[in-house]
Structures are given as C-alpha cells and as structure tokens.
Length: 165
Image (tube, rainbow, N blue to C red):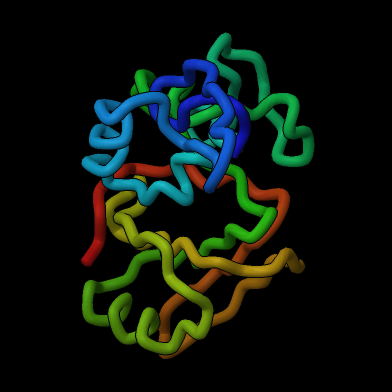
C-alpha cells in the first residue's frame, strides 16, 4: 500500500495497532468507495497516466512496465484525462477484444481466479477483467470465437472506469 493515502496522496501517520491505514480521513475513504475501481486497485502504487495506450508519468516522461520507479499512486494520476495500471504483484487482467456483452459474461463465468473489477475497454468494443493472479507469461487464445489475452506481469492496461456488469 505505501505510506500515503490511496486517494489524495497525503502522507499517512502509521497506526500503532491494527491494520495499516489506507486513507488519511473519512472523506478520502468515502471518496475511494465511490470510485469505480476497488480499493485493492486504488491502493496500489502502480498507476500511470496514458498517452493513447502508452504509459507516461504525470510529467509526460515515458513510464516503463518493468521500472516501478516510473509508477505513481492513483491520487497522482486520477486528475488526468487518461490513465491505467501496471499488472503484476498479484494483479492480472483478461483483455477481451470485439466481444458482445453475452460473450463477455459467458467467458467471465469460466474464470477461476477471484475477479476484482470489470470495465469496458477504451474502444468500447471490449472488456477488461481484472483478477487476482500470480505472475506468469502472457498468452493469447481464442475462446468460443472471442480473442482473449491474459496478462499478469510487466504490462500496462489503460483503464476507463466504465464498469461492466
């Protein structure tokens, strides 16, 4: 999680007992709960702004999917118009291209990993399914006529925040 608020980026005072704090205030906790992204994603320091589908830092410099020093908190990128998240460290994603809602739901029913969040892709013709997943090589396959890519490390996924249910 880090030592900053997952929503506003302010430094956190460490709790003397109990779980580590994720939010600096009730206001930030409530704002994060209203976000389309789940807290497990918001609390990660693996966000970048996007130039198209290319990851960039808030200053506009290139970001790298293999260099965590170029990644930011959600608070640092959320004010931008385009951003995404780096995969790895337990976060994976199924990227379904040119899929109908019914095809996406049928595929999602076959996923064995815990599903964290689903959204429409940037093109609005696909779906991203974020899952808890161990790191492994990416793969692409066709499932029931649907192009499915699965990534769980060293990959940037541009997010939209347009929840798919």
